[in-house]
Length: 315
Image (cartoon, rainbow, N blue to C red; front, side, top):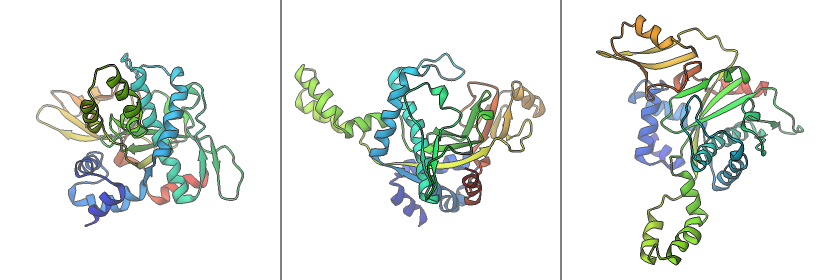
Protein backbone atom coordinates (compact mmCIF):
# COMPACT_ATOMS: atom_id res chain seq x y z
CA UNK A 1 0.00 0.00 0.00
CA UNK A 2 1.27 3.49 -0.89
CA UNK A 3 0.71 4.79 2.65
CA UNK A 4 3.41 2.42 3.93
CA UNK A 5 5.83 3.83 1.35
CA UNK A 6 5.01 7.30 2.62
CA UNK A 7 5.68 6.33 6.24
CA UNK A 8 8.99 4.76 5.30
CA UNK A 9 10.27 7.68 3.20
CA UNK A 10 9.31 10.41 5.66
CA UNK A 11 9.75 8.39 8.89
CA UNK A 12 6.25 9.26 10.07
CA UNK A 13 4.37 7.42 12.80
CA UNK A 14 0.74 6.33 12.52
CA UNK A 15 -0.54 9.10 14.79
CA UNK A 16 1.41 11.80 12.95
CA UNK A 17 0.26 10.52 9.58
CA UNK A 18 -3.35 10.41 10.71
CA UNK A 19 -3.10 14.07 11.76
CA UNK A 20 -1.63 14.99 8.37
CA UNK A 21 -4.48 13.23 6.57
CA UNK A 22 -7.17 14.75 8.78
CA UNK A 23 -5.84 18.26 8.19
CA UNK A 24 -5.56 17.71 4.44
CA UNK A 25 -9.29 17.00 4.45
CA UNK A 26 -10.08 19.86 6.86
CA UNK A 27 -8.08 22.27 4.69
CA UNK A 28 -9.86 21.21 1.51
CA UNK A 29 -6.84 19.56 -0.15
CA UNK A 30 -8.72 16.25 -0.33
CA UNK A 31 -12.48 15.73 -0.12
CA UNK A 32 -12.46 12.63 2.06
CA UNK A 33 -10.50 9.54 3.14
CA UNK A 34 -11.16 7.96 -0.25
CA UNK A 35 -9.01 10.63 -1.91
CA UNK A 36 -6.17 10.60 0.61
CA UNK A 37 -3.93 8.08 -1.13
CA UNK A 38 -4.18 9.99 -4.42
CA UNK A 39 -3.51 13.27 -2.59
CA UNK A 40 -0.50 11.75 -0.81
CA UNK A 41 0.93 10.43 -4.07
CA UNK A 42 0.22 13.45 -6.31
CA UNK A 43 0.57 16.41 -3.97
CA UNK A 44 2.00 15.62 -0.55
CA UNK A 45 5.08 13.49 -1.20
CA UNK A 46 6.33 15.35 -4.34
CA UNK A 47 6.27 18.58 -2.31
CA UNK A 48 8.05 17.19 0.77
CA UNK A 49 11.70 17.54 1.80
CA UNK A 50 13.70 16.29 4.80
CA UNK A 51 15.61 18.72 7.03
CA UNK A 52 18.80 17.29 8.53
CA UNK A 53 20.37 17.91 11.93
CA UNK A 54 23.00 20.16 10.32
CA UNK A 55 20.33 22.24 8.59
CA UNK A 56 18.39 22.50 11.85
CA UNK A 57 21.55 23.68 13.61
CA UNK A 58 22.06 26.46 11.05
CA UNK A 59 18.49 27.70 11.45
CA UNK A 60 18.82 27.45 15.24
CA UNK A 61 21.83 29.77 15.26
CA UNK A 62 20.34 32.11 12.63
CA UNK A 63 17.26 32.58 14.80
CA UNK A 64 19.37 33.17 17.90
CA UNK A 65 21.22 36.03 16.17
CA UNK A 66 18.17 38.24 15.82
CA UNK A 67 16.09 37.33 18.90
CA UNK A 68 17.27 40.41 20.85
CA UNK A 69 15.80 42.61 18.11
CA UNK A 70 12.37 40.98 17.86
CA UNK A 71 9.25 42.10 19.73
CA UNK A 72 8.08 39.46 22.20
CA UNK A 73 4.35 40.05 21.56
CA UNK A 74 2.27 38.01 19.13
CA UNK A 75 0.79 39.95 16.22
CA UNK A 76 -2.43 41.66 17.25
CA UNK A 77 -2.18 40.40 20.83
CA UNK A 78 -0.77 41.55 24.15
CA UNK A 79 0.42 38.01 24.96
CA UNK A 80 4.13 38.02 25.77
CA UNK A 81 6.41 35.17 24.72
CA UNK A 82 9.51 34.43 26.76
CA UNK A 83 12.87 34.20 25.03
CA UNK A 84 12.84 30.40 24.83
CA UNK A 85 9.42 30.29 23.22
CA UNK A 86 10.32 33.12 20.88
CA UNK A 87 13.47 31.27 19.84
CA UNK A 88 11.62 27.99 19.25
CA UNK A 89 8.90 29.75 17.24
CA UNK A 90 11.47 31.57 15.14
CA UNK A 91 13.38 28.35 14.46
CA UNK A 92 10.17 26.81 13.12
CA UNK A 93 9.75 29.77 10.79
CA UNK A 94 13.33 29.47 9.58
CA UNK A 95 12.90 25.73 9.05
CA UNK A 96 10.03 26.54 6.70
CA UNK A 97 12.33 28.79 4.70
CA UNK A 98 15.10 26.18 4.66
CA UNK A 99 12.60 23.58 3.43
CA UNK A 100 11.61 25.80 0.51
CA UNK A 101 15.28 26.25 -0.41
CA UNK A 102 15.72 22.46 -0.47
CA UNK A 103 12.60 22.25 -2.64
CA UNK A 104 14.13 24.72 -5.14
CA UNK A 105 17.39 22.81 -5.17
CA UNK A 106 15.91 19.33 -5.59
CA UNK A 107 13.43 20.23 -8.35
CA UNK A 108 15.19 23.00 -10.31
CA UNK A 109 18.83 22.87 -9.12
CA UNK A 110 18.59 26.46 -7.88
CA UNK A 111 20.63 27.58 -4.88
CA UNK A 112 19.35 30.44 -2.75
CA UNK A 113 20.40 32.48 0.26
CA UNK A 114 18.02 33.43 3.05
CA UNK A 115 20.14 36.34 4.19
CA UNK A 116 19.80 35.58 7.90
CA UNK A 117 22.08 38.25 9.25
CA UNK A 118 21.97 39.97 12.60
CA UNK A 119 19.36 42.70 12.38
CA UNK A 120 15.75 43.60 12.91
CA UNK A 121 13.08 41.11 11.83
CA UNK A 122 11.16 43.83 10.01
CA UNK A 123 14.04 44.14 7.55
CA UNK A 124 13.42 40.59 6.33
CA UNK A 125 9.64 40.29 6.25
CA UNK A 126 8.99 41.36 2.62
CA UNK A 127 11.56 39.01 1.05
CA UNK A 128 12.71 35.89 2.85
CA UNK A 129 14.94 34.90 -0.10
CA UNK A 130 17.69 37.45 -0.70
CA UNK A 131 19.76 35.79 -3.41
CA UNK A 132 19.34 33.10 -6.08
CA UNK A 133 21.94 31.19 -8.06
CA UNK A 134 20.75 29.49 -11.24
CA UNK A 135 22.98 26.77 -12.75
CA UNK A 136 25.97 28.35 -14.47
CA UNK A 137 24.92 31.88 -13.48
CA UNK A 138 26.34 34.33 -10.91
CA UNK A 139 24.39 35.08 -7.72
CA UNK A 140 21.77 37.84 -7.98
CA UNK A 141 18.74 39.16 -6.07
CA UNK A 142 15.49 37.39 -7.05
CA UNK A 143 13.06 39.14 -9.37
CA UNK A 144 10.19 38.18 -7.07
CA UNK A 145 9.70 39.01 -3.42
CA UNK A 146 8.83 35.71 -1.76
CA UNK A 147 7.46 35.44 1.76
CA UNK A 148 7.52 32.06 3.51
CA UNK A 149 5.23 31.22 6.41
CA UNK A 150 5.68 28.04 8.43
CA UNK A 151 3.10 26.16 10.45
CA UNK A 152 2.81 22.79 12.17
CA UNK A 153 1.09 19.71 10.73
CA UNK A 154 -2.25 20.83 12.14
CA UNK A 155 -2.26 24.18 10.31
CA UNK A 156 -4.84 24.64 7.55
CA UNK A 157 -4.68 28.43 7.02
CA UNK A 158 -2.25 30.78 5.30
CA UNK A 159 -2.96 33.89 7.35
CA UNK A 160 -1.41 37.18 6.21
CA UNK A 161 -2.34 40.02 8.60
CA UNK A 162 -2.52 43.74 8.02
CA UNK A 163 -0.87 45.08 4.88
CA UNK A 164 1.77 42.33 4.64
CA UNK A 165 0.08 40.81 1.58
CA UNK A 166 1.10 43.81 -0.53
CA UNK A 167 4.76 43.60 0.51
CA UNK A 168 5.55 40.36 -1.37
CA UNK A 169 4.76 38.96 -4.81
CA UNK A 170 4.42 35.36 -3.64
CA UNK A 171 3.22 34.08 -0.27
CA UNK A 172 3.82 30.42 0.43
CA UNK A 173 3.00 28.06 3.27
CA UNK A 174 5.22 25.27 4.58
CA UNK A 175 4.09 22.67 7.12
CA UNK A 176 7.03 21.65 9.28
CA UNK A 177 6.93 18.34 11.15
CA UNK A 178 8.00 19.66 14.55
CA UNK A 179 6.02 19.94 17.76
CA UNK A 180 6.63 22.00 20.88
CA UNK A 181 9.63 19.89 21.90
CA UNK A 182 11.89 20.27 18.85
CA UNK A 183 14.42 22.51 20.61
CA UNK A 184 14.62 20.10 23.56
CA UNK A 185 15.18 17.21 21.15
CA UNK A 186 18.03 19.10 19.49
CA UNK A 187 19.62 19.93 22.84
CA UNK A 188 19.47 16.25 23.76
CA UNK A 189 21.08 15.35 20.44
CA UNK A 190 24.06 17.67 21.04
CA UNK A 191 24.46 16.49 24.66
CA UNK A 192 23.37 19.71 26.37
CA UNK A 193 21.35 17.71 28.87
CA UNK A 194 23.63 14.74 29.48
CA UNK A 195 26.89 16.70 29.73
CA UNK A 196 25.63 19.96 31.23
CA UNK A 197 22.18 20.24 32.80
CA UNK A 198 21.83 16.74 34.23
CA UNK A 199 25.48 16.58 35.23
CA UNK A 200 25.09 19.77 37.26
CA UNK A 201 21.91 18.35 38.77
CA UNK A 202 23.89 15.36 40.03
CA UNK A 203 26.71 17.57 41.31
CA UNK A 204 24.39 19.78 43.40
CA UNK A 205 22.47 16.79 44.72
CA UNK A 206 19.17 17.43 42.92
CA UNK A 207 19.41 14.14 41.02
CA UNK A 208 20.79 10.68 41.68
CA UNK A 209 22.60 9.04 38.81
CA UNK A 210 19.62 6.72 38.34
CA UNK A 211 17.16 9.64 38.26
CA UNK A 212 19.41 11.48 35.83
CA UNK A 213 19.43 8.49 33.45
CA UNK A 214 15.66 8.10 33.69
CA UNK A 215 15.10 11.78 33.02
CA UNK A 216 17.45 11.69 30.03
CA UNK A 217 15.62 8.72 28.53
CA UNK A 218 12.27 10.48 28.95
CA UNK A 219 13.37 13.48 26.89
CA UNK A 220 12.39 13.55 23.18
CA UNK A 221 15.04 12.41 20.70
CA UNK A 222 15.94 14.37 17.59
CA UNK A 223 15.16 12.93 14.16
CA UNK A 224 15.34 14.38 10.64
CA UNK A 225 12.37 16.69 10.12
CA UNK A 226 9.93 16.28 7.23
CA UNK A 227 8.47 19.45 5.74
CA UNK A 228 5.63 19.85 3.25
CA UNK A 229 5.70 22.81 0.86
CA UNK A 230 1.94 23.20 0.87
CA UNK A 231 1.50 25.79 -1.88
CA UNK A 232 1.39 29.50 -2.58
CA UNK A 233 -0.73 32.46 -3.63
CA UNK A 234 0.12 35.42 -5.83
CA UNK A 235 -0.31 39.05 -4.85
CA UNK A 236 -1.77 39.65 -8.32
CA UNK A 237 -4.49 37.01 -7.99
CA UNK A 238 -8.11 37.80 -8.85
CA UNK A 239 -9.70 37.86 -5.39
CA UNK A 240 -13.31 38.60 -4.48
CA UNK A 241 -14.77 40.06 -1.31
CA UNK A 242 -16.23 37.68 1.29
CA UNK A 243 -14.66 34.63 -0.44
CA UNK A 244 -15.80 31.99 2.04
CA UNK A 245 -17.37 28.55 2.18
CA UNK A 246 -18.54 26.64 5.21
CA UNK A 247 -21.24 24.66 6.94
CA UNK A 248 -24.12 25.71 9.13
CA UNK A 249 -24.92 23.77 12.24
CA UNK A 250 -28.05 23.92 14.35
CA UNK A 251 -26.85 27.16 15.92
CA UNK A 252 -23.34 28.08 14.73
CA UNK A 253 -21.55 28.45 11.40
CA UNK A 254 -18.06 27.02 10.66
CA UNK A 255 -15.96 28.61 7.92
CA UNK A 256 -14.03 25.85 6.15
CA UNK A 257 -12.58 27.82 3.22
CA UNK A 258 -11.45 31.36 2.44
CA UNK A 259 -9.69 32.67 -0.65
CA UNK A 260 -8.75 36.33 -0.48
CA UNK A 261 -9.16 39.48 1.59
CA UNK A 262 -10.71 39.48 5.06
CA UNK A 263 -12.07 42.75 6.36
CA UNK A 264 -13.43 44.04 9.63
CA UNK A 265 -17.12 43.16 9.79
CA UNK A 266 -16.95 40.18 7.43
CA UNK A 267 -17.96 37.65 10.08
CA UNK A 268 -20.98 39.74 10.98
CA UNK A 269 -21.94 39.87 7.29
CA UNK A 270 -21.70 36.07 7.10
CA UNK A 271 -23.78 35.76 10.25
CA UNK A 272 -26.53 37.87 8.70
CA UNK A 273 -26.28 36.28 5.26
CA UNK A 274 -26.47 32.72 6.62
CA UNK A 275 -29.03 33.62 9.30
CA UNK A 276 -26.81 32.28 12.08
CA UNK A 277 -28.28 32.43 15.58
CA UNK A 278 -24.99 31.66 17.33
CA UNK A 279 -21.39 32.40 16.35
CA UNK A 280 -19.30 32.28 13.18
CA UNK A 281 -15.94 30.54 13.66
CA UNK A 282 -13.05 29.32 11.51
CA UNK A 283 -12.43 25.58 11.30
CA UNK A 284 -9.54 24.41 13.45
CA UNK A 285 -8.71 27.77 15.01
CA UNK A 286 -11.93 29.51 15.99
CA UNK A 287 -10.75 33.05 15.39
CA UNK A 288 -7.65 34.95 14.34
CA UNK A 289 -5.92 37.67 16.34
CA UNK A 290 -6.82 40.26 13.69
CA UNK A 291 -9.75 41.00 11.41
CA UNK A 292 -7.98 42.54 8.43
CA UNK A 293 -5.59 41.06 5.89
CA UNK A 294 -5.68 38.08 3.52
CA UNK A 295 -6.61 34.51 4.34
CA UNK A 296 -6.44 31.22 2.42
CA UNK A 297 -7.22 27.65 3.36
CA UNK A 298 -4.64 25.12 2.12
CA UNK A 299 -7.06 23.72 -0.46
CA UNK A 300 -7.04 27.09 -2.24
CA UNK A 301 -3.24 27.27 -2.57
CA UNK A 302 -1.48 26.74 -5.92
CA UNK A 303 0.72 23.65 -5.72
CA UNK A 304 1.11 21.84 -9.05
CA UNK A 305 4.46 21.48 -10.83
CA UNK A 306 3.26 23.84 -13.57
CA UNK A 307 2.37 26.45 -10.92
CA UNK A 308 5.82 26.22 -9.37
CA UNK A 309 7.48 26.25 -12.80
CA UNK A 310 5.85 29.60 -13.53
CA UNK A 311 7.21 31.03 -10.26
CA UNK A 312 10.71 29.74 -10.95
CA UNK A 313 10.62 31.17 -14.47
CA UNK A 314 9.94 34.63 -12.99
CA UNK A 315 12.41 34.23 -10.13
